[in-house]
Amino acid sequence: MSDLADIMDQPLRTLVGGAKNNNPASALPVLAINAAAAATWRTTAAIQSIFDGLHTTRVALAAQAFAANAVQQQRVNGQSGFITVPATRTCFFAFAVNAAGTPFVIQGTPTGLPFYQNGVARIGDGFFPDVGEELALFGGLKVVCGVNPFIPNTTALDAATFTNTFRDMAMKPAADVPF
Amino acid sequence: MAKKNPAATAEDLTLDSALDGGDTDQATKLVSVAVDENDPLTTHGTFNDGTTGTVHHGSEEAATDYIASF
Figure 1 (cartoon, chains in turn blue, yellow):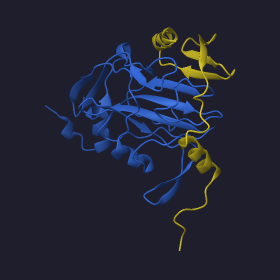
Figure 2: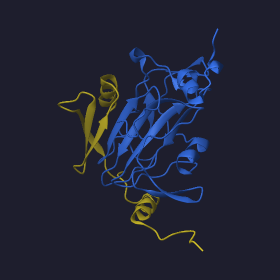
Figure 3: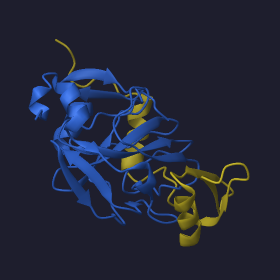
């Protein structure tokens, strides 16, 4: 029978059977704020993923801090951890698990924020970040700051002056700003 | 020779201020939360200083759980 190795195009192979979320629409993980006034997140249902054709299930996660993935975060903005989203900026956060079920959060670059990556000056685009080929994306958070900056793991996800949007996701959308 | 560290920008100052624990919202306290009249997936929190925060939840279940956690 055919297997994933028969798909010669690597990105297509990844989309078909690589790291991706596999929750059916009837059983979404439901990424959400952990509780009122919390800086942590949770899922109310299990996270089902596929890694190289293999199903994996991570039980529902409660009271999770934003855990950085240094390798992938470096690819996005040259940082090993999170940066503060300055006031008035918008920033996406991608939520993903690895094949062992460990959750990570990848931060996008805040709109218009200058930063250095490998010695090169860049400007943040406010786009949804890539989670790489090793992580299965299952959700996203868009943080729109008002007059206050957003500090991951410190600022409550329902704090005053912010508009935050949670979404369950199956794979990285084609749109740079998907919601 | 190019400067290694160019002059600070307004964004840098904002970032520094935030990292120093300065201008954050942490002094405010959430005093009430309510579901949006037109969108059951959206809740609005009101803080003791009169400001509001908005959360768009992924489902009605998540919004309901959030209200219950208040």
